[in-house]
Image (cartoon, rainbow, N blue to C red; front, side, top):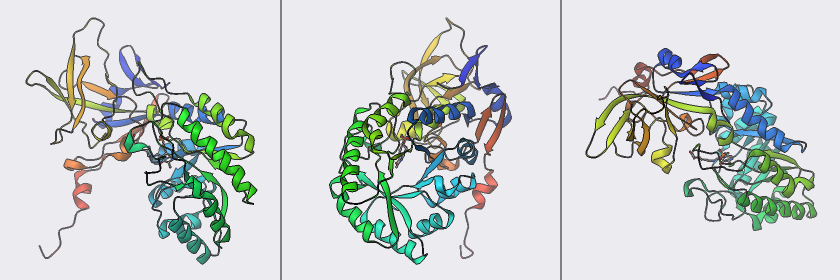
Length: 421
Ligand code: LLP
């Protein structure tokens, strides 16, 4: 459920009419609903209660400071994967003891940054990384809390670019090697194992792969405990999918996911951490764009928008579907059309949808891409020297620009022409 609904035929974000935002900031822009973000975060905390737990929002999905502050104030922790994301979490006021650090290529500088600023745990992904972290922590006279991300060799049954739990993927340590790795951690001076981590992929639309992975993690917990390791926490990653179409998709709900977690690992007495991104942010955001031209091509009509693949890359990168809706609802019985919905970027891949059924639209009309809150703004680029687009946060009947559109002076000013040219 989200808070983007039509009122008197006009699409609203909570109590704010989308055309009012467009008039204030111009198109295209992203708009997020505070009520939806809050609701989705709470679904997880409710689903995991009464188990001791910490929901760590995967900020790679949506990392605007205002959103992080909103979620952090509700009690959310953060899952970060770079020094930049760590800085964002801290800048939003999230305490270090609620931040987990994931990612296969953490540098020594990033390790130092997190150890200085405070960290709940590092999720280790390889033995070289484990040894590097022990050295860094020892040189600072501290002990780093760690989990090992195990690769359970489970098929997440999702898009191949976002599946991470098969043995051929670059992530984690093969689960069979975990006892060896935990034994080495126990010998290393700078590390203290606190738990186990697993994340098998993103946009999972079935519970079964999670269940298979978590069952393996439960067995590993018992094995490691029998070998004398203290396993206090299980970080079960993110990955629960969302419906991208209104009609035919029904991924499991957070309540079902929570019940499955209780069933598979609830008996172990561990604190449960999860790292959801998309389920919290995805349906909390729209991308709003304006129609630049309607072009009648050979046997097809192109709806040329002012948003492009650089603003929302998911359709061209993963072939992802986003529902596209008119901001002003067409009266019932009005004619409709099938459009190839495209952006102005100079490549054919800049196509959002082909033959998409929409009401007849004209220059200046507004459309909204649904489910654009996750992996939208964060994956945007300035390709074709198109400025990053604004982000807007709505709460009740008011909105704020939470990231402004940069000026061309700022964009061009980042380049430098050396004196010798
Ligand atoms: N934890 C780890 C270690 C991850 O790698 C990810 C996502 C998450 C948590 C959050 O997963 P979520 O709950 O959002 O599924 N750009 C792609 C998605 C990439 C996901 C990468 N890792 C897309 O647009 O579909």
